[in-house]
Amino acid sequence: MIIRQFLAWTQHDSATRRAEAATHLARAFLYGGLGAEEAWEAKTALIGLLDDPARQVRMALAQACAACPATPRPLIVALASDHADIAAIVLARSPVLSDADLVDGVAIGCETVRAAIAVRDGLGYAVAGALAELGEVPSLVALAANHEAEVTTGSLLRMVARHGDAAPLREALLARPDLPVEVRQAVTARLAESLAAFAVASGWLTPVRSARASREARERATLAFSVKAEPTDLARLVTHLRRHGELNAGLLLRAILSGRMAFVEAALADLTGLNRNRIAGLMLDASGAGFAALHRRAGLPEALLPAFAGALSAWQEAVRGRSDLSEAALSRRMIERALTACETMPFAEAASIMALLSRYEAEAARDEARLVAKAIGEVAQAEEQSRLDAEVVDAEWRDAKNDARNDVKNQVGMAQITKAPDYADLEATAAKPVPDIAPVPDIGIPIEIDPIAAVLDALPGALLSEFTQARERQRDRDDRPAADDSIPDALVASYRADRERLAA
Image (tube, rainbow, N blue to C red; front, side):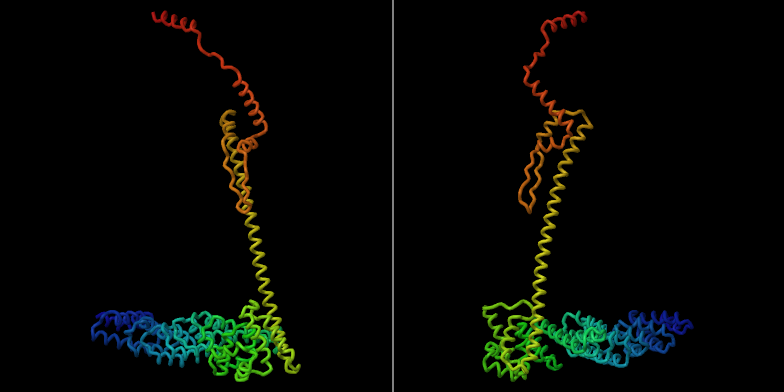
C-alpha cells in the first residue's frame, strides 16, 4: 500500500513532490526489505523516473542510490550518462560501476565528471592511466591528491609531460608520499623550465643565459635527489634521464666533482651495459687504460678524459684520508685538480672545458662561503643568546635582592604603625638571620650578606638613632646592682592587725 502511494506521488505536478517521492521510493526499495512484487514495482518506477524532465527529480534519485551496492545497474549506468552534476554523484561513489564504465566516463565526460572519478576510493591503474592521458589540470590535481589511487610511474610522468607547467599539479605531485625519484626529477625540470621562461619574458636574462641557468639548476636538483636513493631508484633515474637526453657529459662531470659516485656508477652502467662493480673497480684507477676504455665506451667526449681522471684522483686521495673534500655541493679541490689536468691540452680543445670548470669553481666558492657564513651566524647567534640569558639571570638576581630589602622595610614599617617601638623586639629582629640569596649560576660567586647589617641599613635614620640610644641606656641599667624590692615586715604586721580589727 505504501509503495503504491509513493508511485502515485511520482505523478504529481510539482517537481519538488516528485523529488521527495523519488527519494522515499529509492530508500524503501534499497533498505525497506520489500517483497518480490513490491520490489519489482518499485524498481520499475525508479527506472521510469529517469525520464522525468525535471533535473531536481533525477538529482534526488542519484543522491539516494549512489552509495548503495544493491542499486540496479541500469539505473546507475543511466545516471552516469546524465548531466555532469548528476553523473558526478554516482561516478564518484557508486560501487556498481566497473573500471570499464569509469574509463568510458573519462573518455566522454567533461572535467567535472573526470574530477569526480579522480577522487574515488581505490581507483585502479586503468582508470588512472585514462585520466593521465585525457584529463586536464583540475582532474589531474584531484588524481594526484588521491593518495589511495593506484597510479603507475608512467602515468605520473605523462601527467608531468602534459601539464607540468601548472603549479597546482606540481604541488599535488610533490605531496605524494610514494613519488618515484624520476617523477620528482621531471617535476623539478618543468619547474626550472617555467622559471627560465618567466625570466626571459621579464627581460631579466637572455635566452642563452636562461637556458644555461635552467640546465645547471636541473643538474643540481637531480644530484640532490640521488643522495639517498636506492640502487634500483638510481637505475630508473638514469634510464629516465637518458631517454630524455639529459644524461650527458656535463652532468657526469658535475656528479664526479660533487662526490656523487653512486650516481656516476649507475650512469656509466646504463651507458655501457657493464656491471656496476666492474665500473667501480675501473674508477679506482682513473689514469689507467681501463678507465679510458670505459670513457670511450660510454660515448663521452675524449677531451673530457683528463678532467675526469684528475677529479677522480683527487677523490681517491680524499677516500684514503690524505685530504678532505669540502662539504659544499662541488669540491674545489677536485675542480682544481681537473683544471690542472686540462692545462696541457691544446687551447682549442681545453677552452670550453676550462670555462665550464671555472664556472664550477665559482659555484663551489659560493657554496663554501654560504656554509661558512651560516656557521659563523649560528655561533654568533649562540653567543648572543648566551649573553641575553646572562643578563636575564643578573636582572632576576637584582630583583630578588630588592624584594628582600623591601620585605624588611615593610615589616619594620608595620611594626611602627601598630604599636610603639619595642627596642628589644627590634634587636631580636635584627639578630634574626635573613635568608641568603642564591648564587648566580653563570658567575658562580655567592653573595655574603650580614643579616643584622641588612636590617639596620633598612631602618630610617631617626629610628636607628633612637634605637641605638635605647640600647645604651638598657646596657647601663643592666650594669647597676639589682634593688631590693621586698615589703618590710613591720608594714606586713600592721596590715594584718588592721584586717583583724575590721573583721571583729
